Length: 273
Image 1 (tube, helix red, strand yellow):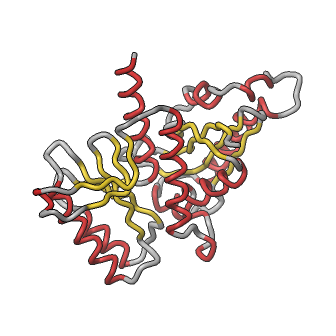
Image 2 (cartoon, rainbow, N blue to C red; image 1 turned 180 degrees about the vertical axis):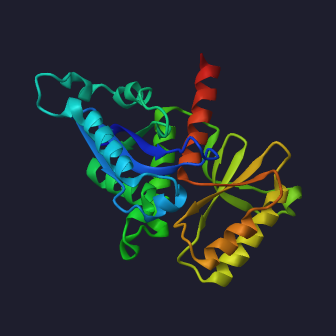
């Protein structure tokens, strides 16, 4: 039987940066059973490259403090309000306390039959570079995580504007069906795997999807969800191809996809009210 949980990422957003962020922890709250799952990054090479002004020891100490703070209601202590661990809005309530360089991503309801397994999937996807290369999630694993978030959003609200395997066909596509992985409002999404396939196939796929963007209307966007992102020259070249000057095209990650889903949820909720 599926259980409702709450999920978020803790992100590092340097105040002196350009607004970009990097995932530093994943959090899943099983409020039905009063449990919290928390895991943080342990490899800091990429983090240092992201912010070369970072004081690593201070960062580690701060992250340990955040973990301790979040877990307080889940410890056996007379001084803590342990009832909070059963509060569905616990993560939302504490999210307002994060300031400066540390912020929570969109808090998403997640429906799952196996909380531990789902948390491991999320950890491997959202803390991708913290995983050893030989155990990093495959394309199937990454898509499984994205599908879990997507199906959970549809479960939470009956949103007709959320569609999976959405295809368009007609005169503007010369009668050829074009299938997108997802559609959220006026945004269309295609998952681009930067590993797994041969380079020639990835190159042809990228070029093909840039062409498919021409089928969309002016108010519609094609967003590429990059999975298995890496620092190889091949991956950088594919990203460079996808970085079109077309304003209807955007490259995003799983966090941004989650944000788009939440925005659509808000629109529908406000319309109903």
